[in-house]
Amino acid sequence: MTINTPPVSDDGLPHAWIETPLVESASLSKLAGCRVFLKLENLQPSGSFKSRGIGNFVRSSILSRSPGTPITFYISSGGNAGLACVAAAVKFGHRAIIVVPLSTKPLMISKLLTAGAVDVIQHGASWKEADTYLREEMLPKDVNGVYVPPFDHPDVWTGAATMVDEIELQLGKGSHMGSARRPPEEGASRVAPDAIVCSVGGGGLFCGIMQGLKQSQVPQDTKVVAAETIGAESFHAAVQAKQLVTLPAITSIATSLGARQVCQQALDYGLSDSVRTVLVTDDEAVQACWRFADEERLIVEPACGATLAVVYEDKLAQLLPRLDEESKVVLIVCGGSNITIEMLAEHKRGAERT
Image: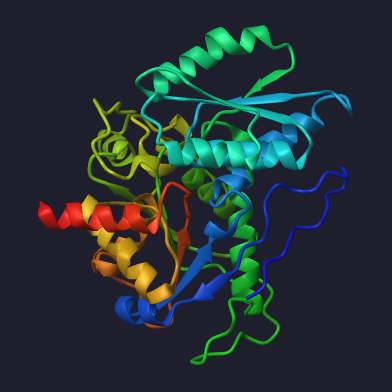
């Protein structure tokens, strides 16, 4: 398995993310009845796909200012977006300050500080309160401060869209480590997957995937399956209602999917005929994480488990009945740092008690 850093762009500033491997899973392929590939975004510098979108926003912000301008990046996320912001800011020699709700676990605060955050400030009982405090109390006092949106910004979507370009090239070149059943097609340069499955929180990853497919030069009819856990299903609710829906609360353990309302662009894309939405229970997401750790030797958050459960719980064939054994389906292993072996075991015990 090789992990490649993208080349430096014409503007001279490197990217804040890496090209991640695309590997074919024999066990998941057998279960699904088609060729299942894993896009290992858990290997990004920040531990999740957020390195692409947040990293691109940070990078674009730096390029929009005069060289040498000191910048402090502010974000109200104690999760993966916060870690991605810190990783990108540190890479480019700038500061990052994170504001998180009082409920944020010590594990994540420690990880943010270890990654290089200048400060992690706890304020408010919810993300909204933390975000309001950041915007109204902190940003106005810093002339060099830049607010970093966790998911609702074109630069975030553009960063996430780079994943699609990589997937098409990797499928075409066979850099997914090859297949014993069928070697890469001779002379192939790009191949579009038949389907992509991803988890949806606020919609940044989903918007990036849809944008990437829209911009693709490869003839394709790729379907996108958007997975959520029950209790964090703001995207599914919006698509069903054909308008934005604000959930009264997030009750799922998949806290990384905990956006009470998705962005408007996600809803606009979600109404496309190529999109399918699917819900899984917390129990199914946790069991998927556990099984994934056992079979693929990778530990991911329940938020990522929602995607994996689409295959493990035999939902893929129901959503896309036309798939066959040669169809190529890519699961976005979005990763996540808010997980340990002990936490996963506790989630599993909790699921077994209910």
